[in-house]
Amino acid sequence: TSVALGDAVDLHVSQLLPETARIRYQETMLLHAATSVMYCPRRTCGVLIVLDSVLSSTASEATKHGVFAELDPEEETFGAIGCPKCQQELCFQCRSEWHPGMNCQQYQYTKSRYADEFTKFCRNMKWMRCFDCGHVIEKKAGCNHITCRCGSQLCYLCGSKWGSCKCQVI
Image 1 (cartoon, rainbow, N blue to C red):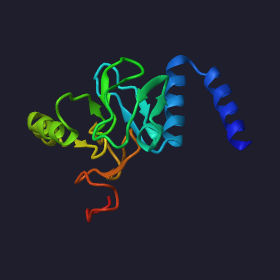
Image 2: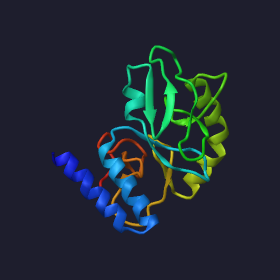
Image 3: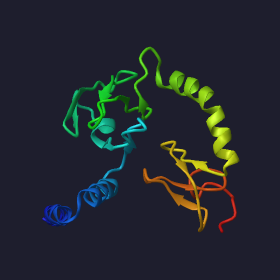
């Protein structure tokens, strides 16, 4: 009953907020409830997508935000599923845009070759990329323990998962 009560409270609170604040509030609630998320990689979209039922599903069909997808966990790739907002075809396994004709490892290798210049630019600007979702983070002040918008925690000095490095905590 507490979950239902929480849902009712969340619904009531979100109805009281202006649209932009409501969207941020709902996204925050989804981030707290979900164990696996991604953001649409399309720069003009960036909507939060909860992957819990897609990645853990053993059934042949899963639903995410009203998008139905035929999934076969035995296959190397599940198949393209559209972003619920912009319909960009996505690969939920490697959390990127759909890459027909390549498996996830091949796509990530190809993508990393083109990202080298961008990565150099980020390093020169003293920015860090999230190891989990790839978002670029700029620290303006504070300690080196960073929580990305995807929920991953990382060290701002080396970029590794928080607590797994030997960097000095400042």
